[in-house]
Length: 176
Image 1: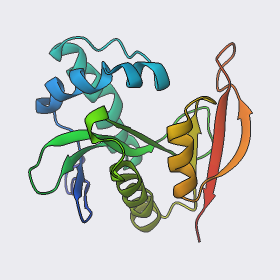
Image 2: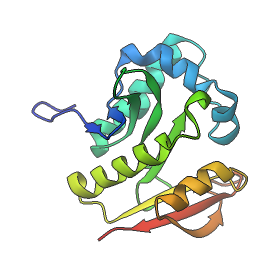
Image 3: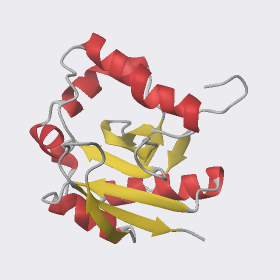
Protein backbone atom coordinates (compact mmCIF):
# COMPACT_ATOMS: atom_id res chain seq x y z
CA UNK A 1 0.00 0.00 0.00
CA UNK A 2 1.16 3.49 -0.73
CA UNK A 3 1.63 5.81 2.24
CA UNK A 4 -1.66 7.36 3.17
CA UNK A 5 -3.78 4.75 1.37
CA UNK A 6 -6.06 2.70 3.56
CA UNK A 7 -5.86 -1.07 3.15
CA UNK A 8 -8.86 -2.60 1.40
CA UNK A 9 -11.36 -4.11 3.82
CA UNK A 10 -14.94 -5.01 2.92
CA UNK A 11 -17.46 -6.43 5.36
CA UNK A 12 -20.68 -8.26 4.49
CA UNK A 13 -23.26 -9.90 6.74
CA UNK A 14 -21.16 -13.06 7.07
CA UNK A 15 -17.74 -12.29 5.62
CA UNK A 16 -14.70 -10.03 5.74
CA UNK A 17 -12.67 -9.43 2.58
CA UNK A 18 -9.27 -7.88 3.23
CA UNK A 19 -5.82 -7.61 1.76
CA UNK A 20 -3.58 -10.62 2.05
CA UNK A 21 -0.45 -10.43 4.21
CA UNK A 22 2.66 -12.60 4.00
CA UNK A 23 1.44 -14.27 7.20
CA UNK A 24 -1.33 -15.87 5.07
CA UNK A 25 1.22 -18.07 3.27
CA UNK A 26 0.16 -21.37 4.87
CA UNK A 27 -3.47 -20.71 3.93
CA UNK A 28 -2.43 -19.90 0.34
CA UNK A 29 -0.51 -23.19 0.08
CA UNK A 30 -3.67 -25.04 1.16
CA UNK A 31 -6.08 -23.13 -1.11
CA UNK A 32 -3.95 -23.17 -4.26
CA UNK A 33 -3.34 -26.92 -3.97
CA UNK A 34 -7.01 -27.90 -3.75
CA UNK A 35 -7.87 -30.22 -6.69
CA UNK A 36 -10.71 -27.87 -7.69
CA UNK A 37 -8.34 -24.85 -7.78
CA UNK A 38 -5.84 -26.72 -9.94
CA UNK A 39 -8.57 -28.03 -12.28
CA UNK A 40 -10.50 -24.81 -12.82
CA UNK A 41 -7.97 -22.02 -12.19
CA UNK A 42 -4.61 -23.67 -12.74
CA UNK A 43 -1.54 -24.97 -10.99
CA UNK A 44 0.36 -21.95 -9.72
CA UNK A 45 3.32 -24.06 -8.57
CA UNK A 46 2.85 -22.96 -4.96
CA UNK A 47 4.04 -25.83 -2.75
CA UNK A 48 5.89 -24.13 0.12
CA UNK A 49 5.50 -21.07 2.32
CA UNK A 50 8.27 -19.39 0.34
CA UNK A 51 6.34 -20.09 -2.91
CA UNK A 52 3.18 -18.67 -1.31
CA UNK A 53 4.96 -15.52 -0.14
CA UNK A 54 6.30 -14.99 -3.69
CA UNK A 55 2.78 -15.55 -5.10
CA UNK A 56 1.33 -13.01 -2.65
CA UNK A 57 4.04 -10.39 -3.32
CA UNK A 58 3.93 -10.74 -7.13
CA UNK A 59 0.16 -11.25 -7.39
CA UNK A 60 -2.36 -9.76 -4.95
CA UNK A 61 0.02 -7.37 -3.14
CA UNK A 62 1.43 -6.02 -6.40
CA UNK A 63 -2.12 -5.57 -7.72
CA UNK A 64 -3.19 -3.56 -4.65
CA UNK A 65 -0.37 -1.09 -5.33
CA UNK A 66 -0.69 -1.07 -9.13
CA UNK A 67 -4.48 -1.06 -9.58
CA UNK A 68 -6.05 -0.30 -6.19
CA UNK A 69 -7.69 -3.74 -6.15
CA UNK A 70 -6.77 -7.40 -6.24
CA UNK A 71 -7.62 -10.79 -4.83
CA UNK A 72 -8.60 -10.44 -1.18
CA UNK A 73 -8.61 -12.96 1.64
CA UNK A 74 -12.17 -14.03 2.47
CA UNK A 75 -12.77 -14.92 6.11
CA UNK A 76 -15.84 -15.76 8.16
CA UNK A 77 -16.85 -12.62 10.00
CA UNK A 78 -17.71 -14.36 13.29
CA UNK A 79 -14.59 -16.51 13.65
CA UNK A 80 -12.00 -14.87 11.33
CA UNK A 81 -11.46 -18.30 9.75
CA UNK A 82 -10.00 -17.84 6.24
CA UNK A 83 -12.13 -19.67 3.66
CA UNK A 84 -10.92 -18.42 0.28
CA UNK A 85 -10.10 -15.50 -1.97
CA UNK A 86 -12.17 -13.12 -4.03
CA UNK A 87 -11.56 -9.83 -5.77
CA UNK A 88 -10.97 -7.91 -8.93
CA UNK A 89 -8.06 -8.92 -11.15
CA UNK A 90 -6.55 -6.80 -13.91
CA UNK A 91 -5.12 -8.80 -16.81
CA UNK A 92 -3.20 -7.40 -19.76
CA UNK A 93 -5.27 -9.59 -22.08
CA UNK A 94 -8.67 -8.14 -21.08
CA UNK A 95 -10.04 -4.58 -21.44
CA UNK A 96 -11.57 -4.47 -17.93
CA UNK A 97 -11.00 -5.98 -14.50
CA UNK A 98 -12.53 -9.40 -13.92
CA UNK A 99 -13.98 -10.95 -10.79
CA UNK A 100 -12.00 -13.88 -9.46
CA UNK A 101 -12.91 -16.25 -6.65
CA UNK A 102 -11.94 -19.55 -5.03
CA UNK A 103 -13.08 -21.09 -1.77
CA UNK A 104 -12.00 -24.17 0.15
CA UNK A 105 -14.51 -26.90 -0.83
CA UNK A 106 -15.89 -27.30 2.70
CA UNK A 107 -17.31 -23.76 2.38
CA UNK A 108 -19.12 -24.31 -0.93
CA UNK A 109 -22.91 -24.35 -1.38
CA UNK A 110 -23.88 -21.74 1.23
CA UNK A 111 -23.67 -18.57 -0.88
CA UNK A 112 -20.30 -17.30 0.36
CA UNK A 113 -18.84 -16.89 -3.15
CA UNK A 114 -21.82 -14.91 -4.39
CA UNK A 115 -21.81 -12.74 -1.25
CA UNK A 116 -18.07 -12.04 -1.50
CA UNK A 117 -18.09 -11.42 -5.26
CA UNK A 118 -21.09 -9.08 -5.05
CA UNK A 119 -19.27 -7.06 -2.35
CA UNK A 120 -16.02 -6.93 -4.35
CA UNK A 121 -17.83 -5.77 -7.50
CA UNK A 122 -19.73 -3.10 -5.57
CA UNK A 123 -16.47 -1.90 -3.99
CA UNK A 124 -14.96 -1.58 -7.48
CA UNK A 125 -17.97 0.41 -8.66
CA UNK A 126 -18.15 2.66 -5.62
CA UNK A 127 -14.49 3.16 -4.63
CA UNK A 128 -12.81 2.89 -8.05
CA UNK A 129 -15.59 4.06 -10.37
CA UNK A 130 -15.54 0.90 -12.47
CA UNK A 131 -18.37 0.77 -14.99
CA UNK A 132 -17.81 -2.74 -16.33
CA UNK A 133 -16.58 -5.95 -14.75
CA UNK A 134 -15.78 -9.16 -16.59
CA UNK A 135 -15.87 -12.78 -15.53
CA UNK A 136 -13.84 -15.58 -17.12
CA UNK A 137 -14.15 -19.30 -16.65
CA UNK A 138 -13.44 -22.56 -18.39
CA UNK A 139 -16.45 -23.78 -20.40
CA UNK A 140 -16.91 -26.84 -18.14
CA UNK A 141 -16.83 -24.91 -14.82
CA UNK A 142 -20.60 -24.94 -14.34
CA UNK A 143 -20.40 -23.84 -10.69
CA UNK A 144 -18.56 -20.61 -11.56
CA UNK A 145 -20.83 -19.99 -14.55
CA UNK A 146 -23.82 -20.22 -12.17
CA UNK A 147 -22.22 -17.72 -9.76
CA UNK A 148 -21.50 -15.28 -12.60
CA UNK A 149 -25.15 -15.54 -13.61
CA UNK A 150 -26.31 -14.82 -10.04
CA UNK A 151 -24.09 -11.73 -10.09
CA UNK A 152 -25.78 -10.50 -13.27
CA UNK A 153 -22.91 -11.12 -15.68
CA UNK A 154 -23.97 -12.04 -19.22
CA UNK A 155 -22.10 -14.36 -21.60
CA UNK A 156 -20.19 -12.38 -24.25
CA UNK A 157 -17.91 -14.80 -26.08
CA UNK A 158 -15.61 -17.79 -25.88
CA UNK A 159 -11.98 -17.20 -26.82
CA UNK A 160 -8.38 -17.81 -25.80
CA UNK A 161 -6.59 -15.10 -23.84
CA UNK A 162 -3.18 -16.17 -25.15
CA UNK A 163 -1.88 -17.90 -28.25
CA UNK A 164 -2.40 -21.65 -27.94
CA UNK A 165 -4.31 -21.36 -24.65
CA UNK A 166 -7.54 -23.18 -23.96
CA UNK A 167 -10.57 -21.05 -24.87
CA UNK A 168 -12.39 -19.47 -21.92
CA UNK A 169 -15.94 -18.22 -21.56
CA UNK A 170 -16.06 -14.45 -21.03
CA UNK A 171 -18.95 -12.72 -19.26
CA UNK A 172 -19.60 -9.01 -18.63
CA UNK A 173 -21.55 -6.81 -16.25
CA UNK A 174 -22.36 -3.20 -17.15
CA UNK A 175 -22.73 -1.02 -14.06
CA UNK A 176 -24.34 2.40 -13.98
